[in-house]
Image (cartoon, rainbow, N blue to C red; front, top):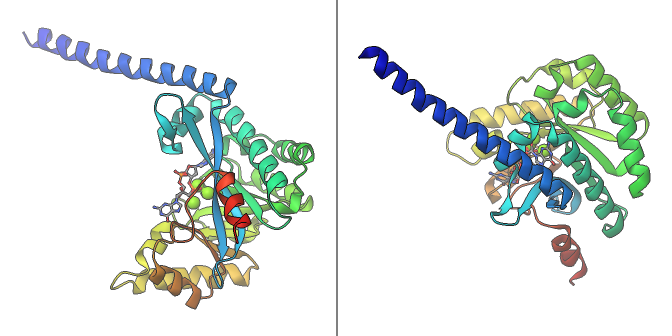
Length: 276
Ligand code: C2E
Ligand code: MG
Ligand code: MG
Ligand code: MG
């Protein structure tokens, strides 16, 4: 009897597992098709100087224009794209398109950042590929900033440092993304060639709450440390005027968030800039 039950439970488990595998396989083949049919596009979120809200850069964020399911965000597909190794091909397509769009449409000023995953950084020739891509698209290296997370550094910090160092010599900047979450280690701050650091939105979110003195202290400390090391700071996820004011008063120079502008296709920003 018990054995019988056990077997049944097993069967149910197997079914669920099999269904999950079918879903993943289906998703993989959809991702391949999407790549062939150019269904990925970058949305651009403005990065603003906080003093006067002037747009100084854009973060390129991937979106999937799914023919049936509409516009998909990274949380809907990036994990599976990473597990299947497809993220690399998808990202390179997206990076190149992002650089091309900004080189064509932007004035000479705003920089562009994009998110580089651990998989990319495992290639010792990542920098070579980036520089070739910049040549093809006509975007000056000084206008590109790569975003890396602390998690991506765990694998092989020495090799990542060398790649970022070579990119820096060529003019390409690096930003440490989601700072303060995950594996924060202060040693990264001085050992990596960083132009920028992005304070994770979890800290920003707390800033306008009653009893926010702890996050205020943390943000102030991050700012002091970064500035002492000559690293510029971008605050992520600014949603309220009170958060913005708190950051300005603490001397944070740049920020992004729904208050300043949500991610949107390039046409949105070009039109905005053209209108009087
Ligand atoms: P991230 O690099 O930290 O990007 C910021 C995320 O916060 C974006 O979500 C953005 O839409 C969202 N955001 C911006 N302002 C606000 C705000 O005021 N409030 C809140 N609550 N959220 C805000 P998104 O576009 O869904 O991207 C999620 C993550 O996916 C990114 O986090 C990044 O790690 C990854 N990602 C995005 N694009 C790419 C890509 O092209 N390639 C790879 N490999 N990863 C990407
Ligand atoms: Mg980012
Ligand atoms: Mg990120
Ligand atoms: Mg981030």
